[in-house]
Image 1: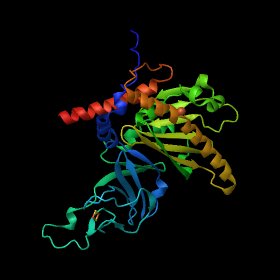
Image 2: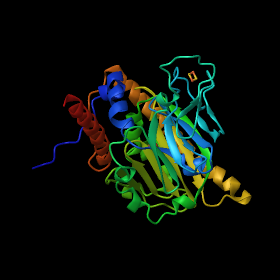
Image 3: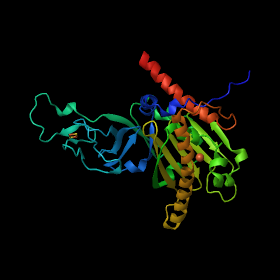
Image 4: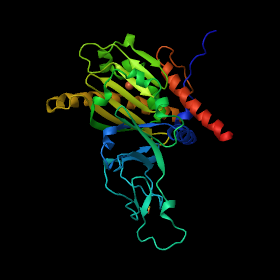
Length: 346
Ligand code: FES
Ligand SMILES: [Fe+2]
């Protein structure tokens, strides 16, 4: 029996706000999110505050040495507690009306609140989330369906020989892109577009031997390199929305964060083994060259998004040679939405 042809998703999946709302619940609320270097929260008081598909969250290292995470939402009238980004704070105090929380999330003081016999500090803690670190990377999850180890799937084996925790974070680069997070991900997990969209990059890799393999919870793309390439020849994407690319002497990671149905942000971190002053120019060259390639994808992703929104596209076929991983990713999305819908119906 011939295999049925692989088909792209219906364009409504990429533009419909209702689908986006379901993905927030079934995918982004239920899966671990990679938030960059764990060294951001190494010392007591250090925090990282992020947005995850519209939710605002933070991870913080307590004075007791414990790493914890919370919604970045004050239980009083909903203000954010910490500005997005990383930093250090001695006291968790909401700027709005100055409620103070301790490192375990308990409300300690509500100054000038007044007398109300029904009001107890203990009833108004911050809402906790799950946080973990793995090999130098920080992860958080609002209400995870699985352990981080389970979600990572085949990644630990894939990176067993790469000394990723020995690399130091050197640069953060953020990109706003006007397309659905899946439009960008579909593009990331195939090398089919390399000759058309990345002609310079195509010259330093052996495209005929470009390979894309869907593993458990991840996709590996690899290609033999030609002389002079600054790339590592191995690019990994992990379900549901992060990437890790190795290059000689370092790596980059990225998180693909949806901003509504029609926008996304990419948060890249670059890490290097050699942080010496002498290597600064080489590091900057690597960051610039990688970012240039990332940017080359934006035009095609944004035009494709507009065509999905226009109603002028009907699902086309996916390449069995190059786009098996697009089908794998899309299957994971469809399965997560179906799974959540089935639970909701019970
Ligand atoms: S909203 Fe935070 S103290 Fe009022
Ligand atoms: Fe690309």
